[in-house]
Amino acid sequence: MPAKYHIHVKPVAPRFPAHGKSTVLDWGEGCVRCLRCVKETCPYHAFDQRDFDKNSLCDTIDSICKSCFRCVQGCPRELVTKTRNPQYEALGDPYWTPEILLSTWYQAETGKIPVSGAGYGGPFTGDGFDSIWTDMSEIVRPTRDGIHGREYISTAIDLGRHPLFLLFDDQGNLAFEPPPFIEIPLPVLLAEPPFGAGLPRVLEASLRAAKELGTLTVVSRGQITPKLADIPNHLVPSYPAGSLELDDPLLAKVRLVEILDADGVVAQIDALKRRHPQVVGQVKVPADSRAASRVAELAGAGAEIIHLAARPDARGQGDAAGLHLKDLIRQTHLRLVELKLRDTVTLLASGGIALAEHVAKAIICGADGVVVDVPLLVALECRVCRQCLKGEPCPVQMDKVEISRGVQRLLNLMGAWNNQLLEVMGAMGLREVRRLRGEVGRAMFVEDLQREIFAPLFARPGAEAGRREGE
Image 1 (cartoon, rainbow, N blue to C red):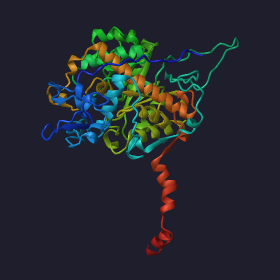
Image 2: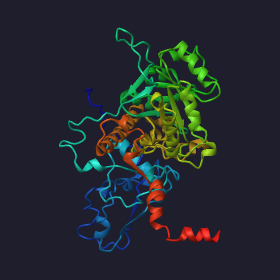
Image 3: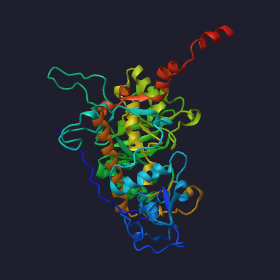
Image 4: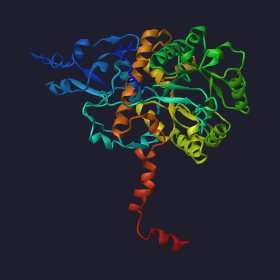
C-alpha cells in the first residue's frame, strides 16, 4: 500500500485584514465609566488588538471579532452594537459571494476546514451544486481512529487514455505498448485564472504549489516565462487552436499538453504524439450545448483527456448559458457511458469550482477531476472586484505577492480541500476517489426529488382528469 498522501500546511497571516461579516460600532458619548469595561473583558482581546489599516481603510476589529456578542450584551448603556458590514457585502459578485471569499481566505490562512460553531442557518438547497445532497450514511459508524488514523483513502486519479481491453502474447507479455498516463495524488489541477492583477506572480506561486502538491498547472503558452519553463514536470502549456508548433522546445520537456478544440484538433494531437510519444494530449472543449456530442466524438477518435470548460460562474458557454456545470458534466458522462467509451478517456471539468464540496459533487456528476482557477486568486487575497479588467489599481496589490507566502497559502487551501474530500468519502464508505466518479447513487438531486416524489404528493386529486375534460 502506498504511503498516505499528506499536504503540509502551516498558518500564513494575511497581508490585508479580511472584511468581517459584521462590524463593531462603539460610542464614547454616554459612557458611565464602569469599573470594568466590557471591552477589557473581551475573550478574544479584539479591542486591545484593534487598529486602523491605512491600505484597506478599515477598522481591523472586524476581522478579529468572533461575534460572541459578549460586549454587546454586557454594556449597561448599550453603547456597543454590531451591524452588517457594508464592505463585506460589497465583496465579490452574485456567484463568488462574500461567504465563499471569507471561507477561502480562512482556509488559505490556516489550512483548516471552516466550521461554524453556531450551526448552519441558511437554506438546505439552492442552485447548481447546492441542489445536490451527498450520502453520509456511513458516518454513523466511523472507524476507531478516524479519517486520519489507519484508514487509507486514496484521492489519486489517472490522466490519460485507458485501453478497452488487454492483449497478451504467448509469453504472457502485453502485445502492444500501452498509452502513457500520469497519476496525480489529488483530483485537482491548477490553472491560469481568467482575470487578476499580478499574473506572473500568481502563475509562479501556482506552479510551485503544484510541484509541492504533486499535481499540474495549466498555463497558456504565451504566459510561460523561462522561470516557469524550469518546472516542466508540473507545467501544462495550453495552445490556442491552430497555434501548436511541433518544434517548440517546451514540448520535449513537459508531460501533458492542452490544445483548444477546433476543426482538425485530432490531427494536431496525432502529429504531436508522433513527434513526442511520451506526451499526453488534452483537448479543451467549451461547455456549450454541443459539448456532450463533441466529447463523444473526440473520445471515439482517440482523445486521451478532455477538459470541459464552463464560465467562471459555473454556467455553460454560448447557447448553454442557462445550464449549470453539473448538468453539462452529467450529460457528457452519460453520453460516453451510452457509447461504452467512458472508461477510455479522462474527463476534467472547470468553471465555478469554488469550494471543496464542488470537487466531490463534480466527480459524482461524472468528472474524473477538476481544474480550479479563481480560487487560486482568492487564496492570495483577491477580492474578485475585477478592477484589473478596467485598468484600475488592484486594491490588494496582487503584483506584490511574495512567492513563498503565496505558495504556502495555496498549499493551505488545497490541504483544507483535501481533508474535506477525505471526510466526504469516509462518510460515504468509499476508499478511493476513482469509485466516486458518476456514483449518483451516493447523492440526491433536488430536481429529481421534486419530480419523482414531491410532485405526486402535492398533486391535486382529479386535477388531471378535470384538465382533460376541459380540453
